[in-house]
Length: 112
Image (tube, rainbow, N blue to C red; front, side):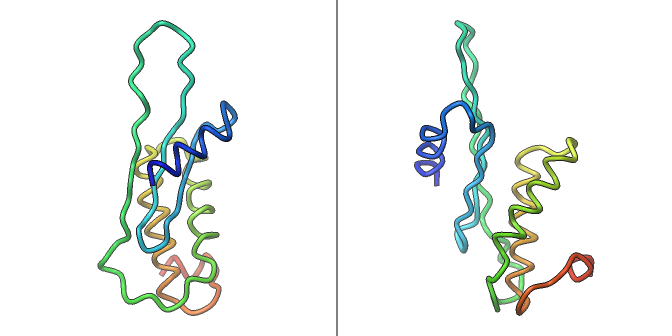
């Protein structure tokens, strides 16, 4: 996962501020990019990896899981009160819940 995120950030250059990488059954990862053009020693941004939640029921249907992952990530990023690690965990959790249900569902279904 780290190599994929490195490649994406390198390809996107300075335009990529945050990179999410979803890996299905392996979970997902996120890292914030940075550009250090000064002489100040800034530590590199952390890479967060979130495995899937094994306590969920068996996978039934993955249709829409990626949409749920990205939608949850974007919603939580806009809230400005969660860390990237928390955003990643919530995104993986919601995508995982989607995988336990057949077909597409709406937000009311997730509220259950």
